[in-house]
Image (cartoon, rainbow, N blue to C red; front, side):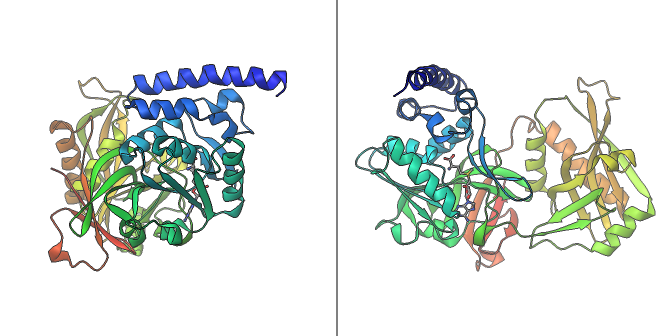
Length: 413
Ligand SMILES: C[S@@+](CC[C@H](N)C(=O)[O-])C[C@H]1O[C@@H](n2cnc3c(N)ncnc32)[C@H](O)[C@@H]1O
């Protein structure tokens, strides 16, 4: 080992300890066993092209981009990895599957399960799987993790142990829960997956309950999109050129032509809610989750471009929540605060179309209910996953999302 390398290793030790202290302080790492895993695995060795400082920042390190420059592989941010591992309930002797490889997270998993456990990691890209295999070998984890190139839509495939995995951790943004994931989960196992719910992005921890899965924990975070057979579907409608666009899930219907001509007519109703928002308050994710859990149809997929703001179509350039009914569309907007409240902005609703007054009020009413009902801090829906063929009358109350391979039911207590 060269002197430089020794220096780098010593520097990395210091940064790693600092990172662990921060993760513990914030509650991302909650257990000694996970802290020990973070202490044991040299994160910088799994991000060789990043500086040691970048490797130990609490941020993702991008390792691969597609032809358009969008990230498609990364070493995920430490706080996300810590939370997902805590949510997974992984412990000594367990058998675990990681979907989406990189090496580092699999090494953490190997440290947690120990010599009596087993870790399988699958990645859809051959080069990612090969690099992860090399990095794991260089850092001494070759015997503890098996990396294979496969579409994780089908879980661990032939490498699934008898009785299933005690934990399945998906590290790419998934639109759906394919049957392989629930089918390969051990009776008391946990599936942790970044799941898209009507455009919101939730990491959910599921357990088996009867013939379906039920969420037992949640944190908010997005991942690089899943590819292969569990990639996102849906379609995007241009409502006013590309300045105002709405993305619909496969099971959502809208009268596209009627919505376009409603926006083109410029006949608009705006309702101000009296609900204020502080800049950097971080309340929007809970509002989005509240809206998609309590309003049907609803999606947090209305893209307003900077030009939409210039043209007066929206008060902000953002991806926000919208609802629609026939040829009527309503979506969130903001203006500088005119209320007596402490916020910098006031939330409002713009609506176009024949029933714009009714739909604007419906959405505004939901926003007020979120504010007055004490939901600003967080909204904690339960998400249940049923087989795709489950008839509606066998589902519990809640918002139903019918995906290609499952039916999800989102409900608030
Ligand atoms: C965020 S990275 C994984 C990070 C990794 N778990 C770590 O150590 O931090 C997401 C990975 O998911 C992979 N991926 C995307 N779609 C997939 C699929 N259908 N099956 C398996 N892997 C997939 C990508 O190639 C990418 O390498």
